[in-house]
Image (tube, rainbow, N blue to C red; front, top):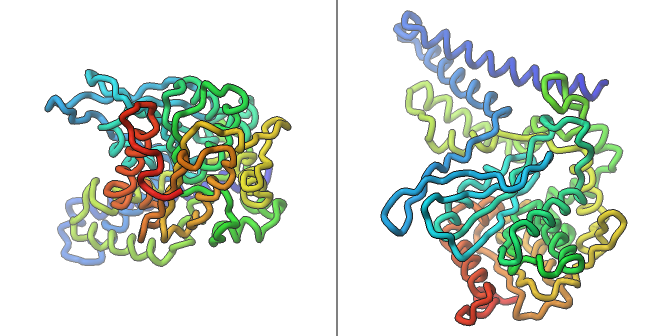
Length: 423
């Protein structure tokens, strides 16, 4: 019961702060009050505006905001977001560009389940959509999933990926970003032994912890420093009575958000202080730089307790993927069974979450894959976010990934697999 009470307490505090912000904004926006030339009232209105927006975003799933796409015929085509497979813990979603001829490149973008919604990859989606037939994994918020649906850990996550790949067929090209990198690799290895014809043509792994110890960071140090008992006692709570998942054990999104912010607390405090001053001068808007970033950053989701704990224990502590000892339902998933899927790794030289070396370790596990099917790239000056959504992604990494996909799509006219970078 104590875990449920603490969950409800966090939600009560969030709701209270949202209400305080809305109240301050309403009071200082009243015509009589706003007519008083007092800078303190302007600041209070700015504080209320920013506070209400910030705390309301913490329980709101962002919209994709992709309604149309300009195409080669000079027209804007409507984009319909279709659910291909619907499952309790996550769906397979297709961005259907209506009226556009189907693209040759068929890409499955594997979104992370690490505290944020799949919309964290919105800019990645918009950059790939003009050139690809695009699909994405859309994971659900654990607070909204009834306990009757059962557990969901990293084995279940991997099997979801296996089913999604089977649904899309062997012409698919998989791009995994951050947390799902080792599990996407495991899912491909599972298919290599279970159903070889269903394997994707290429697998691009971007900034993920295949071997966390290859280049330790603050994240990996934390995983190694704390015990599983400590994690369970400090991080795990039960969903409160407000949501359909009442009673389910989760790692709450609000608790994750506090951890995210504490890593760069000074930067976040300065960002919000500056935004409050801009709001007090009426210089803010729904789509200004601050709101665009924090509307997504603050929108967090709960993870199932078993997924969070099994990720820490099996990926970071036991290093099952790095040692090629990962099992699903007691069955060894042998990564060396991958023999035909071209694999490319992408890392950021300044990535402080999945540091260089952690992702490229995947290539050493592919002992049966020819060298011409392997490629790697380290982006100079890029941090974690930049390698899949920032300027480095748009200008450098995205073209390399598309070239890699084209080089391994089966056409005789394609280029060599590792043209872009050395294996």
